[in-house]
Image 1: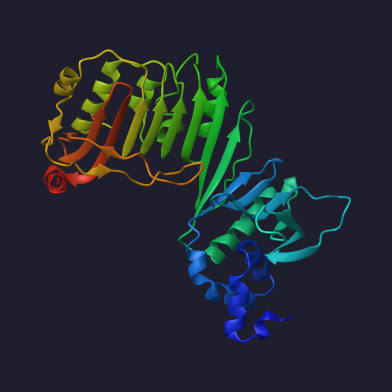
Image 2 (image 1 turned 30 degrees about the horizontal axis):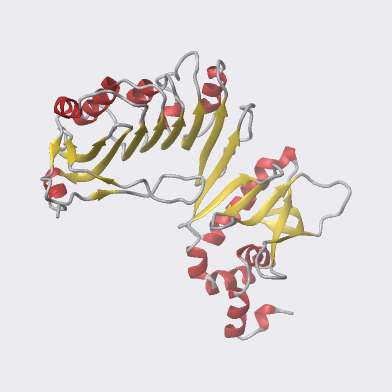
Length: 364
């Protein structure tokens, strides 16, 4: 069957009923086939917002399209199997790569199978192979697709991090048992990595905090759990956009000083959203708000709802939890506003790219 010989309507219908992984594999056949697929499936390819590089259940690197209720594998990368010949070879961005074809049943209607290519990647040639395939992805899927390299580890901080893949954001998740004493290894890992899109840490305690200049504080987004002694340092040094923190220890003074530093323009110029889940605290809310210098929207009016897309989320790429509060603060240096909600067990802080006058116009 020579698909390119079919009438356009028939050919387009064939393409439309193929999986993205199958279209990708078919596009390797020739430049003309790749052009036909990109032209016919332009809107479909543009609707792919994210491609994620991550390991599967067998610790093989895969390229996924995140979807619910499952993630579509569009390609898997494995060490060469010396006991079997590859199914075929393809020229990808000028590099000849061995492939085999894999099928996976998706627990959908009967006889519904998902086909995707498996690329052989020699350890000594890993970087150039991934670089060639990623270059192909950039051209095939277009400029609107975001790429994430997701790595989770638990004990060993040694992991492969790509250095030559353009437009790829690095996202790290780790679970560090108590007591965690090897903070230097974690610091070295951060320092040798590109700026991180997301750092997700579950860390119960450590002997000392991160260095104030650590790349950890430069991550676009951080998500931390059980940071018994980390909160003051995070609130002093974080330079990114979004922070999600669950802590077992907190002083109300740390929260006051955070808001005051934001208001003065001294720090947190990039901050969009902060949520801290707190242990039970005994404090006078009115007194704290007076110290901070909170302003109020009239109780009978409806304040605007602050929410925005998460920088990165492991699961559904959703929005931040909405903040609807009658309380707000104003930054002195540029008159920008942040909604603030202080509750018994949480502080929510959402910065608006609006002056106080513009913000108040959104109040119903």
